Amino acid sequence: MRLHLGLRAIVSLPLGLFITFFQAHGPDVGLIMLAAFSGAMALGNLAFLLSKHQTMAEATSTLAYLPVLLTSLFALFQPEEVFLALFVTGVALLGALTAAFEGYRAKAVGLSTRDGRDLLISALIALALGLMFLIATLDSVSAVGFFGAYLILFGVHWGIASATPASK
Image (cartoon, rainbow, N blue to C red; front, top):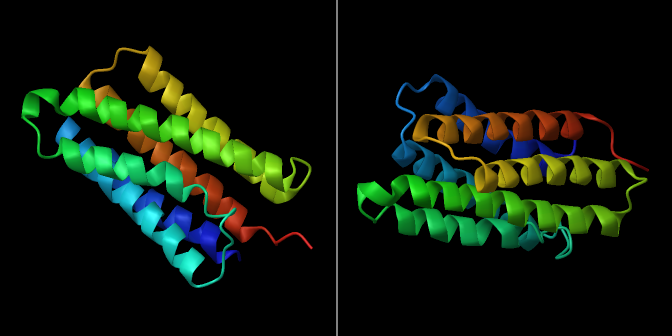
């Protein structure tokens, strides 16, 4: 099992399941989950980088999570009327930055390798999320629900990727 991929799944699946089964799909819940997700992913990437289990090139996705964490934490201290707009902006930012950094990393690793294909799939899922939040007009229930669905897709993908044997 590849631990750093499994930890991605362990972070995102509980948050996605919480959103799914929590009855209030308000933008405040979405912002808290967005802050928790981006914060945990950024801290996890930094911890793996500091423990020498990752190179700086492998930890580039940390750069995608830090602005999203700062945006979502900033949004929590704003008036409730702007929660939805800031949540949609934060998720669109998450999708765009994650797609860019993981797409870059997939190309650097090589699309013919298993790791490259896993990163490309993750980049495409994130790109779909970012485009949906940029193009579609979403109410708060739909926006938070789609973000929860993304977390579950992301978690399942990385859970499967972590359970497959590493390339030799």
